[in-house]
Length: 105
Image (cartoon, rainbow, N blue to C red; front, side, top):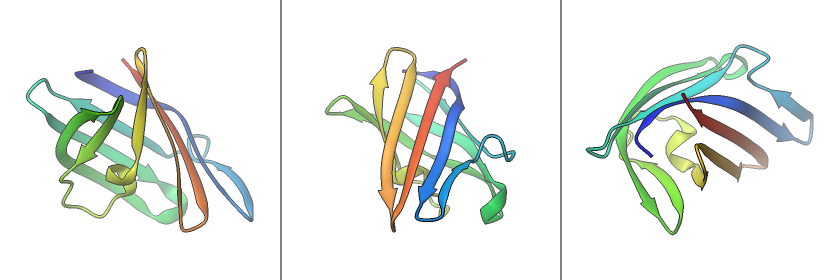
């Protein structure tokens, strides 16, 4: 799973509707090193989020998880199912469904 990934899907769905975060200029990116280090960047214009992150990654029960991220981004709360060269997350936080697909570059 080591490599560089960028979002090809990034949506947030709440009672107010679905926001396509990619279309509004947002995007998470991630790099996973073979050493277990994870780095990346998250941009969500509607939430004024524009942050780098650093942490670790591991695969557990067929899912990739990003851990030990000291900044307060949602990225470490996502569990990514592994589907070939894509990572697919579909989680709900405080009534907001977040769907992210990261595709290996």
